[in-house]
Amino acid sequence: MGLEVQGLTVRFGDTTAVRDVRLSVLDGEVLALLGPSGCGKSTLLRAVAGLERPTAGEVRWNGRDLASVPVHRRRFGLVFQDGQLFPHRNVAGNVGFGPRMRGVGGAERTARVAELLELVGLAGYEDRRVTDLSGGEAQRVALARALAADPELLLLDEPLSALDRMLRERLAVDLAALLGRGDSTALVVTHDHDEAFTLADRVAVMSRGTILQADTPDLLWRHPADEEVAAFLGCTTFLPAEVRDGVATCALGTVDVTAKDGPARLGLRAAGVRARGTRPGNPDATGPLGEVRERVHRHDHVRLAVAVPELGQVEAVAHIADAPAVGDEVGLRLDPDGVALVGGD
Image (cartoon, rainbow, N blue to C red; front, side, top):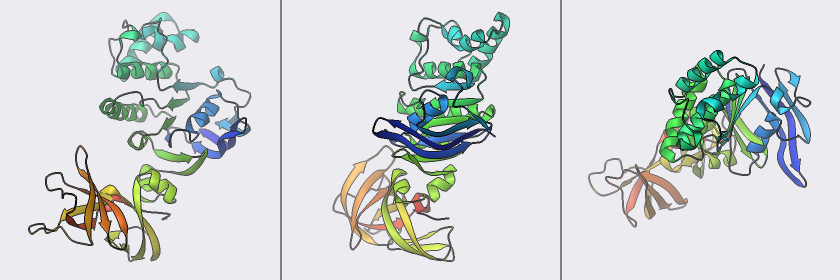
């Protein structure tokens, strides 16, 4: 059955951090709580863990109400942003702490520690001091320590946010493989879109203490429930469209969609609008014309702000090699990978 949260509300004085949340995490599923800082996602996770007392609502695990079950008896594994390792214990002492508290014998505990360290890519690290570990290594040890207790549910609160970007991306892929290999049930809190989409089977977008939409990454990306979800997922331009036979037509062109015929609303991410200069030799400079007003160089593309008559300013991208300059006239065309059908089925 897994985790069920019914009507959960958490208040701190006059502040409501979590408001009437309802969600479920099935056995073997990874659900990511995605949202900006202060939206209530960490408070929700802490309430599931038993670290915060709900003002109203229920948290159930496999049908059992956990209201009277203390944290240490919930059989949940917790991993926090800073790992919170025991500084006076070496790596083996940290990972083996849970089994030792359960009375697991020395030989069995040693074997379990070695198994888990190999699983997280740290084979042979048993005798390392945790104070000598890198940030990525420390988070791997924290994950191994959580797994050592054989948790029924893993709770991960921003587990990678303290790491640099490249390491975070690499560990997210490793963590996704680890969770998938072990058929783990997990609830992950993150503010990073890429991290949520990499790790989770489903993603729940939170704002102001409530869940706006919970869906698979693909559906969430292509069909955000409303403009607030779409904007959080990177849509900067919203245009009315008309759908006919699976094709949506708007002021910037056409794009294939999965929707019924009739009026629709498209959300365009910057990558959903491609810009090419109108000078001779650019056959792709089709579609509506606009003037480049701003230009920002990113690591693999150039981000543009383009003024389009009757539409206002539109964000677009261009290839680095032939990116137009400020003041240039450009043609715009839609890229379906960056277009969302807002409120679509």
